[in-house]
Amino acid sequence: MDEVEFSLQQSAITDPGRPLTGLPAGVADLAKVVGGVLVHRDWAPHPVRREDADLRFVSAMLDRLGSLDERPSERRLAVTCRDFTVLLVALLRAGGVPARARAGFAGYFAEGFYDDHWVVETWAEGRGWHLVDAQVASGEPGVYGTKDLDPLDVPRDAFLVGGQAWMECRSGVRDPRTVGTSAAGLTGFWEIQGNVVRDLSALNGVEVLPWDAWGLIPVHFDELPQADVALLDAVAPVSAAGGPLRVAQETAGLDPRLPAPPELSRPSALS
Image (tube, rainbow, N blue to C red):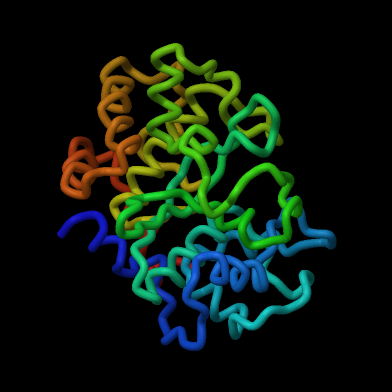
C-alpha cells in the first residue's frame, strides 16, 4: 500500500461511524459544508463552549451535531483548525478522494510569522499532493483573517509542515523566533518539535489533537539530549517529504517515544 491508497481509508479518528450521503463532490463545496457546522473558537462572534475542541473523533463531532446541515454560528461546534481539517479529510475520504491531515505552521495569519496550524493535503491525478486550508476555505474571504490566499491551493512556502519548519530553522534559513503560536507568545524549537512529531503521527493515520503531548513533545528543546535532537533531525525530512508511507512507518518505529499512545486513537477509551 502506498500513501495515496492509505489516504483513501478512514482512520479511527476520521471514521464518521455512519454513512455520509447527499454530499457535494468538490473540495470547495465540501469545505463549505464543514464551515456550516464548525466555527473557529477564536473567531466566533459569540461565547463558545471550549470543550467542543476536545472532540477527538469525527464520529463524536457528528453525534454532537446530529447532521451536517448548515446552522447559525452559535449552534456550530466551536473548534480549532485541526477539527476543520479532520472533518474535511473524513468527507473527502468518504467521497473516494485521498486526503490526509498535516500539522505545521501557516505564514498568512500574522505578517512575518508562521503560526501553529493544521491543513488538509489531498491528491489529484496529474497534480499530485496539494494543500487545502479547510478552515479558511470554509468561510467567506477574510472571515479567518486572510484575503490574499487561495485556500484550495496553499503554496508550500505559505504553509510549512512540521518537518520543513524544523529543517529550515535548524539550517539557519529561518529564524525560529518567527515560528510558533503568536497568540500565546510561544516561539522557537520547542514549539516546532511538537509538530514534527504530530505530523509524523498524522502521516501514519493518527490525527491527534493539537495539544496532545507525549514522548519528545513535552521536553523543552533546551533540555533535549543531543541524541534526541538528532532523532528529530531524522524525523523532519520524512515529515517534509510527506512519506513515502513505508518510510513514515519505519521512522515512527525508530523510537518508542515517536508513535502516539494507542489510547489517543481508541474511541472506546476517550470521550
